[in-house]
Image (cartoon, rainbow, N blue to C red; front, side, top):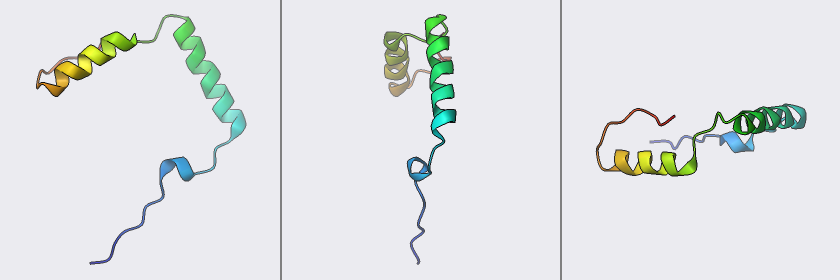
Length: 58
């Protein structure tokens, strides 16, 4: 059986202007309070790992 070779996503060249724009958009969302605090995400992931089915935290 032949091994398949896959190119990792991070090896694809990025466009610095697009990356900067997307970073700025993400920072603006966080500044506007649209992010989910780390502790809420951590708690959600820990509970999922124990088999609990929960909606994504907001």
